[in-house]
Image (cartoon, rainbow, N blue to C red; front, side):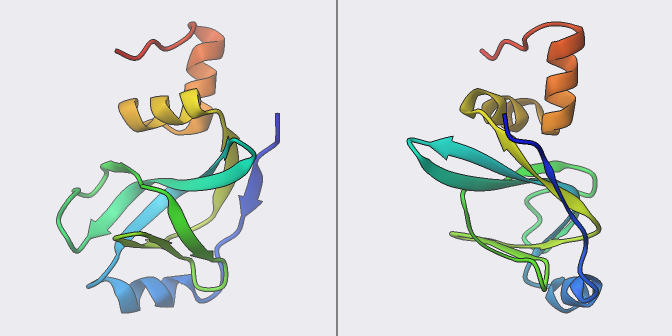
Length: 127
């Protein structure tokens, strides 16, 4: 299994977030979740919402996005098909199975938390 990769916030990320508050969802405590789908790596973004100009989520809610189209490490901007996200603070690129990603989305917990629960308590069953 691949290890996680720490991604440190760039010097311009905070300024980017300030400039994009009216057109992006700002997230912190984020993970760029990589999944191998038939030999093709696909990424999703998981994070805690700081603000969302579309009012889909409130402060403190979690978001698990659709597939990531682009991630700019210099600006901290993540684009999906229909949304723009600004990253706040350091995060990680993590590598999950499809089943783990489904659990992240369903119960709103990070990959580290999912794995810790399953290690300590047992497998999480989804309906």
